[in-house]
Image 1: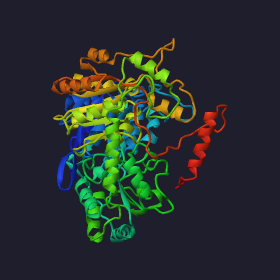
Image 2 (image 1 turned 120 degrees about the vertical axis):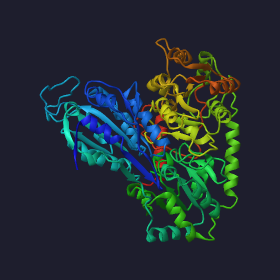
Image 3 (image 1 turned 90 degrees about the vertical axis):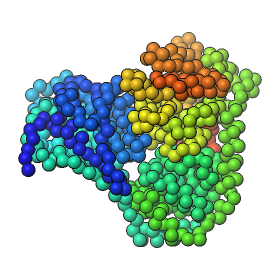
Length: 636
């Protein structure tokens, strides 16, 4: 076998062009493209290599390192982890900006290739521009901060190290059981250093995602648990979506009359119109799902991590009478809640489990239909919330006075309720449209109220709940499905945190739609404060003289070159949405919504830290209430 002389960066780009993935016999290129912000450390290495020959890679210039990584994450998630974008940054601050995005990818088990530049391997120019120095080690660089938020991490200080490192990184990213961000830091002098690479290294490489089959022991044990149960409940997690288990979930649920409930990552695996789908589970879940969970004597967790929001901080179930069966490609996740473990692919397991349950029906009977109808009536009520200046009863408990609500109504010139706005959007946009969200009160409203009628149209990041993911992620959705309308569901707090790739979308004529819910504050955390006895402290956006901050976000969007709208009623919102659909440029619809008009909790509880000692009686009571709740929580 011959060799080919290339720089390390040229070898990297050549290798990325030759990576393919095979799922169920279908092969496709795994790396779709690369997001770049060039700076010292990568512009003369990876930048030169891309300029010389990018191959099939789609090269996109980002505006913020974290933002472009969020776009890559949303793209991979929407593509069911079957395609990725790489992300390259400069050394120092550029690399540090990747940390929040890497944590987002890791928490959500999303593959993304991060390629931050690093300091000199020779150390001769040390300390080079943007290099940090530690007295205890000269080997430490900014990129060490990415270790805890990477599934795989390596530093390249010699060209030949690239070969084994890349193969290892792609093994991790293409393994459903441990998929996550792979970070390869390349010393900036090494990026431009040449080496005689084996030609074989650049041959077409196919990564096979063979479905892991359950063992006979696992199948027999799972069947025994289900057959012995009276009221089993299926929790549909993200792993079910990535396994493309929609059809077997519907059949399995129908055949055995087992209700489905969803995590944020699992939502829209099965469309909301399916009769046995009771919607979101847990703290941000529906009343129907949480009531069903309370009745269940067997929880079948399919591809879920059992986060505290799904389990209501481990109080959603009757642990004295309920057993757990977990189907997950990750052994770590399968062990959660002391469950019987089936470490295997979700779709394949359900297909092989079905024949072992012939004749089995749960005892839920008509309860599933009754629970669903009860919830849909509540959803209908929330679709038409009307504000009253005299006696408005907020959906969220707290001490937000009527006087303050009226102040907001006057300052923002609105009486629009957030739930009304959200359901209006759901009823107006095309059913195959894609939505994304991440932080604030919107993920709770979305998990409860959003009614997807087309599978895999709901892309809410709630594993890390990273503020700023929404707008950047919308660009990723558009790259995944250029033929569909895509919408960011974002609060003003998250929009201010980051919307850098809104400009990138406009620059590359990738039409995205930003739906901005402006309540002039960090409303979700304000709720958390006030529900636990504190006052409203530094979560409202107020001016130096205590007025309410009123930003014209529509004007900001127009300055970027987007088409902007202002909509403070349901009628105005419908008109704006219909016109936005006709546009070829990116759009932003600014909605001034009143605080405390989001959904409340439905028989769920969240374990948060409350001050044990306080001079406020309301805080003392909140702590006592927390201690009482803890008596119902499990500790494993």
